[in-house]
Each structure stands twice: as C-alpha cells, then as structure tokens.
Length: 388
Image (cartoon, one colour):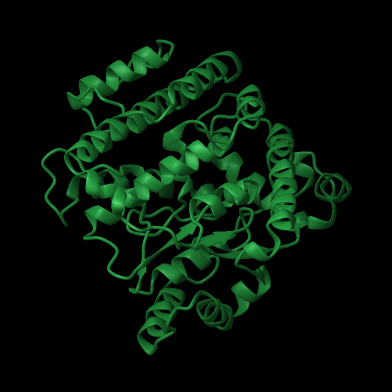
C-alpha cells in the first residue's frame, strides 16, 4: 500500500520504468538521488514475474509496496536537497538486537523502547520515513493513519496475530528501512523468488545499510535531533549482515538472543505461512519449510563467520531466550551496564509497565509442528550445525 489517489492496475507487469513513473506521478518529484537501486529493483521485478504466483491481493501488495518505497525515496531526496544537515545527525551507536525470528527479539526491542531515554523505531515511521505532503512537525497524522490500516489488516489475520503483534505506535524491525534499498536479501522473506535471493547474496550488503543509515538520520532529524538518545534497532536478517552492521554503525552495542532452532524453525514457518496465505495461490507448507532452511541456514553461517572474524572488535552480549521470557529485567540491566546507559528508576518503571501490559500469548498461542513444514530435527541439525 502507498499513499495515493488511485490504485495501481496490478494486472500489468511491474517494471522499473513503470514503478518510477507511478512514484513521480504520486509526488510530483523526479530526483531519486545518487544511491543505486535500479538494478536490484529490475532483478526483483523480473524474478517476481517469472517465479511468483500471486493472488490479486498479492500482486497489488507487491506493486504498491515497491511504489511506496520509491515515493519515500523521492520525498527523502527532496528534503535532503533542502536540508543537507540531515546527514550530520549522529546515529553511530544504536542498541542492536540480533537473533533469528521467534527468539524474543521483538519483546526485547519493545521493552528497551519503552524507556524514554531511548529512541523508538515505531511502525508508522518505518512504513513511511518521509512525511506526507502538508504534514506539520510533530503531527504525523497521515503516516499514523496509514500504519493503522496496516495494523488493522494484520489484526484481522488471527494466525499472524498469535505470533506477532503489528501496531502503529509500537517499535518494529528496521528491516523496513533496508527494504527501501531493494538490494537486500530480506525481500525474499516476503517475495519468495529464489533466483533473486541467489543473485542478491552475491552482492555487497553495504549499499543497503548505508541507505538505512541515511534514513535513520532523516528520522532523527525529523524528531528534533539526537537529544542524547540512542536508537533501538531489531532486525532478524541482521544475523546475516553482522560485518556490514558493524561497519555502518561502528559504536553499536549488540545483544544476541539464542534459542533452540528445533523450536524456532516451525514457529517461524507458521508465522510465514500466515503471511503467505493471502499473497500467494496454493501455499505449500513444505515449500515454506524449504525456504526457511534456505534463507536462515546461510544467514546463520554468515553470522558465525563474521562473529569469529570480528572477535574483540564486536561489542556483543549473548542471552538465552528463556531468560528473556521468564525474567528479562536482569538481562536488560546487564545490557545497560555494558552499553553505558543509566538504568534509572524511571526507565525500569516504564519497561515494567510495558511488560505488564504485554504478557506472552496475549493474542493466543500459535500451533505448529516440524512435520507440517516437511522438516525434521536432523535436517535442522544438518543445516545449522552447532547453532541448532
């Protein structure tokens, strides 16, 4: 979905030229900036056309999402031309939560984001980093309304809601920002063209992270500047891009949540199946399982290699998923000490208030099994090795 006065004709094949023309028409702007994106976008459109069997809803979602990314790119570039000081914002030291999906990373991000001394990546900012036309500072009603539509749509999907709550005013994944670069492998998790994944993984991850940094600077500038706050970032896909994250955010403090992957994989597959059902025809659970192994096996191998190579350069704390679920407060206090943050009474009160209002299984408990997704414990051990 994107902000506009007419819908796309999703029966037409999406091309780079058509997508860019739609974005220019939507905004009245023409300058997309110097950041390269057209090659990756062309590859994504080609692979989607050749490999993905969308429903009508899925085809519209794919095309409108691409145009929304381009609309935001045009508006960002226009603001950057008028306010070059945006790129002077310091975002070098975020608090970065790492871990595969279903390992407690969302809970940890939202707990840390409840502390007002930290900077929140709320969903409405992530979906549309650029203000809508006529938006006044501090009054993002249009972007909030857009995010509320997304929130309501996801809450109508009870299978999805049991696994993950999407809410306009809650913190969410910074992968939303990275997807705007197009040159990022997490696009495969929604638009599941294997050829695109293979292609994009042969490329450097740095351009996507460099663009994400600019968008963080943009969001910080909109919010009145740094004000001695650090961003709280969470993106499961970051496990496959640890070196790029470290180079982009050299003062980052990382916290890595670990959970038994024999529990993680079927839970993740259940979440993805619930996402795919309205987007694709004839969703095959065994194919969901295959794609999960394909994506996360390589991501975790890259994580292990980058972590070993970076060694002492990496400021990383590892935690256990069960500790986050049972009692996250000692974990958070230790993390604050490692990060040089003040764990004040006000911080703890805010964090506890969020925790009390958001107990586990708030919207029910998802049911899943390895067998449904064509997986076995041995397959997971073979793919993930010691990480399993």
